[in-house]
Image (cartoon, rainbow, N blue to C red; front, side, top):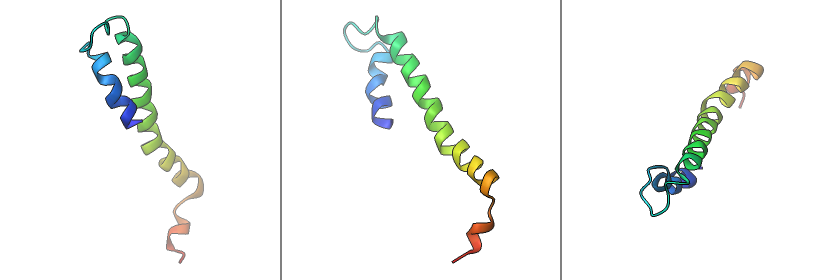
Length: 60
């Protein structure tokens, strides 16, 4: 995901030739990737802790 975000930055910022037409698409993809990465990093572990609790951390 990080490589895709970095790769789409020039297109989203209209830095390349002909990128004016693709800039809205690049911004939409960047927004979706950013939200999905944030949800994966923060929301999924938080939901796991809520469902399964912290009782398994003391084992082992």
